[in-house]
Image 1 (cartoon, rainbow over the protein chains, first blue to last red):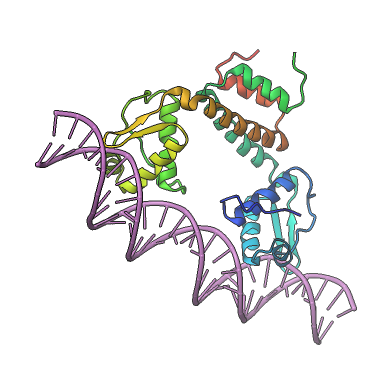
Image 2 (tube, rainbow over the protein chains, first blue to last red; image 1 turned 90 degrees about the horizontal axis):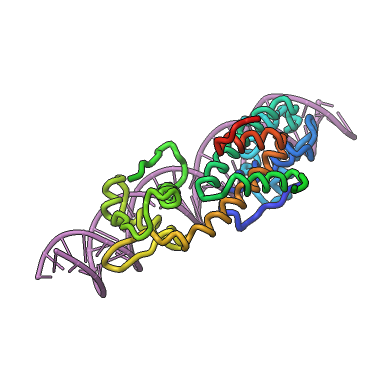
Length: 123
Length: 123
DNA sequence: CGAGTGTATTATGCTTCTTAATACACTTAG
DNA sequence: CTAAGTGTATTAAGAAGCATAATACACTCG
């Protein structure tokens, strides 16, 4: 399902959150589909179930999962997280863009990079 | 010179690095100008000199400062860090842009936000 | 010479992350 | 009904990183 990067200095639970969030946002994990149990995903990643539990709890607080006692964790419907995610990522994008400007990157350079990222043809 | 944010959960030395780098890149601290000594900046921020030393060492490794034994730390000439900084921040920008696209933000939305960030007039 | 500088070392306390071992209530397949 | 699998909670322990404190030493400059 996911692969951990041991060179990454961040906590494991944070990596798990990031990677699962990515799978959900990209649509690789469909709404209402069942997530692996904390025990099975812990086994698969050679990580303690508590660590997975911590990741799931955070994903639940952020609206990406919902838990059903005795049954498991499930991907939340898109309406629960899509708008919040867009707002969050746009704020981050504006911040990084500000840094880029400050570092000396020009409007034209970024405009070109933006076209590139969206597969637009260069003039 | 700088102000620490105690709500920020990152290590102090990392905050110091980020804020000083910002001052250098923006030009607020001119090349070859003298930085505060590790002891004086430690006093000013109510932080241990070792913590400042750690920040200075990292800034030196990244090319923003150079140290002269017995005299102090100084801002490195722009040629030492400008290009590296631009490359680094562009890579980060491309990554965040990819995330924004994946989260559902359109080319038009980002193009508008880019114009906004550079103070361009909207058509 | 003395004050101020960078730099290094050692020790200590604190917080966070992670593992481990349980425990309990719930749901579902058999 | 029973057993297995689920989420969830608790407690204990170890490891690592962060920060402070107290020194120490070589250097530069007034």
